[in-house]
Length: 630
Figure 1 (cartoon, rainbow, N blue to C red):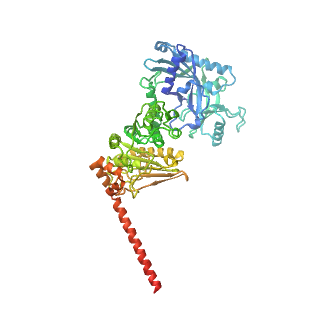
Figure 2: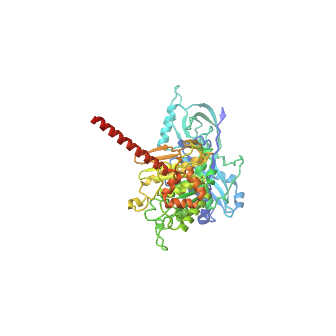
Figure 3: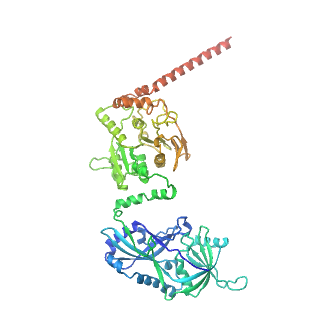
């Protein structure tokens, strides 16, 4: 026979708890040192996982407010906060007397009240001092536990049918400790069975949690000295113990001060000097999901490489807005938006970086510039981002030069932005506007992610690298074309001037584009990766084509076309040789580009082949007619 042991409760207090405490201390509590009602929570016993091997009391900023909407994944417990005004008072208070007073409060309830809830047995207390000048918080948590000594006389497994009864009860309502059978039940010999009680453990440790101690004390003080106890845990380690009470303290002896991480009795210190700045708190909260992914799901994922990337978004409209938000979620810190459009009244409902007030400025009687306002909005969402907006019109093939000084300046600015950034997103709303960025991306060997929308379809693709070997090089946006891109913007009707798509398509396409980039960055070869290779978090396809009308999605692969009008060796070599002169000639005459890349010759050969085929068909027809005439 061995004495029953208990697993101590531990506290996990988020920094937001102390941030809220400092605010309340300044605005509400001031010099008032009376106890303040707070609450915490334990994970619900049906939600425990393998990491919950210790009972954890959680507190955060919500602990100062009584939860109006209960979360089914939590078991709420209540406590008192005693926040003193000086460090001397914190040190000089008689901690043993405080614990005795708190334990005696529970003892009086046990003796004088007929029914108690689990909230009475699990009440906790916090003694604290808030040094708001240096943002240091001294605290000590107590869980008063009344002493009684119980001996384990017998241990056995819990029958499956009993487990089913307990789990059914848990589904209906939560009770941490309750009686399972009537005390008058007889056994096979006719003798009365001991009372059987159920304790729902608050952790998956092999030793029952400390909360059990107060329940057993209550049984002992009410003269139940021999009981059967079922300790329920959802992981299959439930136990049935036959217990006998060997001794009981009356008046009660009380323990319960939390020990430090070193196992010593003493207070803890939360130094939030570096965290109390709201920007730093925002950064900590923003990275929480990423850290949880790394710790629990993908321990090998490289988050640092995401923070190191400088990302250029060409287009700050619907796609640009959603892509930038997804980049923030992944922890990208350096984002540049480029666009030359203004915010119109149709934009805010589809473009989450903008609001109604951005559609009209009293100063210029027009909407704000998308790129400039978008960069400001990103900083308002997350101050830690280094976001910039560039108001610039990208020179487009098929649109002849009208102001060479201005358009060459735009080209040189765009070229400089490509040099300064690591990743380029093509998110514009016309085909020809993507040509020059595709050329620059290939020539400078940048990671280029392209996202394009149809009415109910979308295309996500990554461009290949000029450093990929022949046969492995992936195609670009133009590699399937047999003609150079041309003007598609002039003389358009209203429905053609707007990007007419199903609203959800942009969200899906944007998220896929960012996820494709993240997967790509997890591979050591980055843009040199072949189609459908894998990384630590999944595959890296070349293209993703989706269709909302059928809710389907396909991964495709297109090799580089040796005569492509944007990424072929002919085009890249000519750009590297002549720079702006080459670009100007292409803008003025798309047939010049077709001549350079060889598409013109292929078209001519195709026309000659067609003429020859027609001639052969005519000769065959004449011979067939002569055969009939003869």
